Image (cartoon, rainbow, N blue to C red; front, side):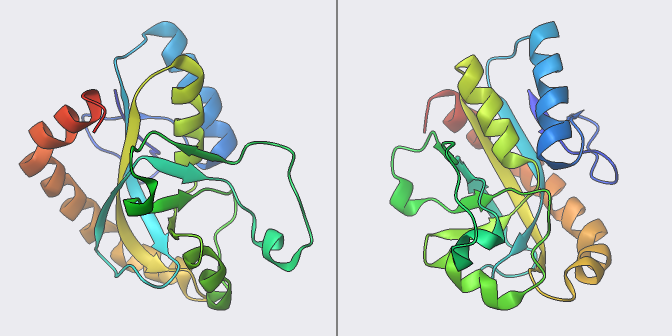
Length: 185
């Protein structure tokens, strides 16, 4: 099953699951109960903490849920906030998910030190639901903005072109993308 957020990030071949970690988890769970697929594959946009460039296309099978306040020792969590289906996490670009977009560029270094290079609001939910249902999962992202004070305006400026690039990439590489996912690679 191919998934996207919807709400401006739509693809004709993808199910819309909503924006953010809560709405996407609820909607995806409802979809899973109605019609259980063989795999989950999320596609969408992402913000870069600094090392990934605008319009880079990044595949990942690893997600986390870390809030910015964690880096100032202002918070902790008792939940498992990292999920991966990758056999080689050291080569993975980890995608962070939160209901908030990072707008302080200096915080990005904290993520990069942990091999977390991009943020997308829904991916951790997708990976969480996939783990609960025992399904292989992954995602493909196109960078639309840097995580800085101009994040929203950069996102809006680049979103249309980014979605076209992502759509073309998926079309050109679909066999490889889905074969690797269903074979656990």
